[in-house]
Image (cartoon, rainbow, N blue to C red; front, side):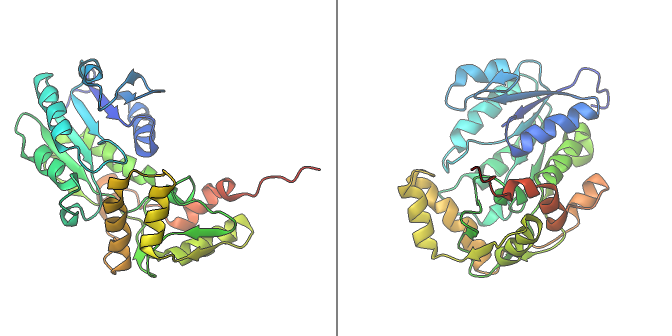
Length: 286
């Protein structure tokens, strides 16, 4: 797998936060990336439309595996896709999992997919378990609304990671799969921060007051479900993710990004300066 001239990486979630960055990184390194998503990608891909799976896999010898979003039960669907990947001659899969996946609730299929991917012999595999991504604060996931970031953490800390660093780790596993076969990496940022500390950094770069409201977990999750932001069964995922931080078991800084890529991870202050436009107030018109 050292000759790269005819290698194609199928990037699922190719228009998403890590997939889009990964595709660019692969292209910059001279590798062919085929992005796949329901729309806006090189090829259409819908987890629930298996007719899209074969064409997406055609000619690909490695995969960046991103499972269905806003769902918790998908192991059987992913397993069927991996069967097709084996039949299509895929030689390596890098799976985007989540930090602490071994502690996920049984209703959530993250760990089941890890075990499936790592247990297969037709291809090699790597698993990436990132901390919460910094981009959560710069997009619609945890937006600043009326100067407030609202999320239940009970003052716990998390080593938030830049999605670009996740993509950089993924790129190495896909470009050099033999060197990363069977490996599990947990990309984190260089420091563990509370959301209050994140809010203070955002306030500095945005030039306006921003604070964290540490809302009750049940109210926050119930509100997200009631507003249709997430489906009802996804509540277990939100409860697990926020509860991990609230219990003091959020991610802690490690050297995985440096070890895999040779470059240190991005700190939140640098990320915030780079994305200051995300928190700018709209211009006032007369």
